[in-house]
Length: 506
Image (tube, rainbow, N blue to C red; front, side, top):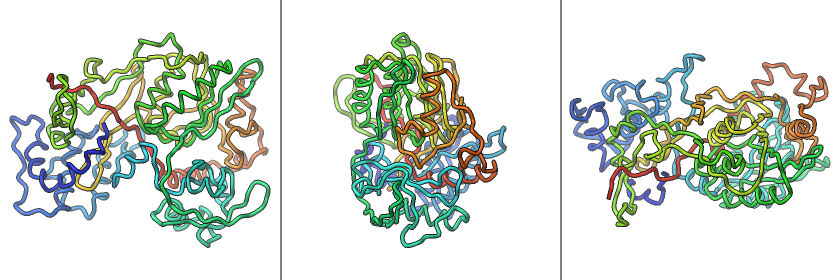
């Protein structure tokens, strides 16, 4: 549903359509409730603030918790982000007493490129390793990215960043510095890296555009009498399906019967790609049965989200004639007829009996969707840390030069299971050792999966054998919090990229 090619159509939507928004947005029953009356004069920013709230009022998954336009006073906020933060504050999770929405954000349009498989950054990410706030390491690198071309590798320890050696996580100022240096808008980043062999190297990585290959590593292991396929999959980009097909074709040719899907850093992406991966793993016997249902905002289900008439696109009607449609013309009912109930359709010939998923607090949305889809139809094991917790998704709402992403739907599997806002718990809790490469059979998370495949049991806990076992729970939790703050810049979401069925019968 992300129609970024039509972005220019909405360039001035906050100005041109601003008053139309007022005429459609604040009505539960548009035939009865009176329209709010906007002031006679409004700036471009004021109209954008109006639009952010009014779109939320009709399309936000928790819009029942929002106040009226008059009570909210959208134009009083100092910035668009502060306004969105306020919107996120209304719906409270009763189990935690905190706002449930940790997902909504504003984007400048670059995310749609990344979702399509093209990025414009350095091509690497970093985290503190093994509960140690002084051990900052490269956690992954895209091979053909600027960092990949500079021979930056997973496990390299960063000992100096942009000339600074005080790069621990002991202060918020340091964390802010790391975020700005690695994920900010600077043209380049300089690092001194300690490689695995103990040598040091100085590198400067320039920001640049590159094609993302989210398949970072594959291998087939022998575990006991079994062939076990291992796949490191880093993002559900829309260009990933052919790459996944190739991986599972190879798995099938080598007689793989179990798979390890490493999603430890995968924050999600395209729902369509998630369906494809689900069907590559699922047993043939599941074909035709329900995979999951998409539950849109109640206002959208009821056909009352009239503000979506302002989000327009060109498409062929059922008669083949190209017309101008809007997002209001989609059918958001949770039915198969409306296109919001997905069924399994086995993809490829791999015969998989069990799937292990390596996960962490960075594993979110589309990654969790795949796991939740498969649990009712096959044996699934989770290894690592509890996942992020994002059973909701969205599409882009374009307002002037911004894309607004607010949750608009929730997914539930064939057993009506969902709601994992606090994350999915794991079957084996263990740490991510960034010092080891993907595919190293001694790396703890992979080793646990291989152990279970071979012997039917995970690795035993070895107190003192690794640093994480001697770190206090509070320190460990704080380091994981810092890592999540650093990771917050990664693509994170469940994005509806397809067209639902149109209500119009042309």
